[in-house]
Amino acid sequence: MKTFLFLAVVISNLFPQEKFKSVIDEKSGKTMLFGEITREAFKDTSYSWWFNSEYEMYKPDKQMLDSIKQKIENIRIRIVLGTWCSDSRSEVPRLFKILDSLNFPSDKIKLIAVDRDKRDLAGEAEKLSIELVPTFIFYLEGKEWGRITEAPVETLEKDMKRILWKEK
Image (cartoon, rainbow, N blue to C red):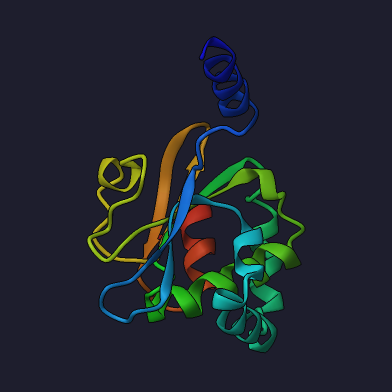
């Protein structure tokens, strides 16, 4: 019995508790991601069909990219999304296309997948006052600098520029 208990402890330390789950969405009957994820999650066929097509179709505004690039270096981004949400399915791949065009480091991006009640495993969405998804939160020196909620007011690039340059 002691050997079994020791082995269980060793195994649980080797394989820490998951940060996310893939669960069934009761409304659609399809899988949805829930918790802190990485971009790798979009490679799963349950999500790649919408992520890849939207990513490939989107053409970032190159003129806006130049002004964004000047200010994005010290920014961190938190993306709160619902894989069940049509706005997340369009805006998240578009944001990644923009960030890839800027060579933005992936370690400065944190992705949190929420359920239809805007909850996640760690309770982070509630702390961030997430009401609509997707929500893109931009941080400078650890402080929230601005956010884009559900859809951009103009375009993602123009809204990002406004946030980064603190234009109103």
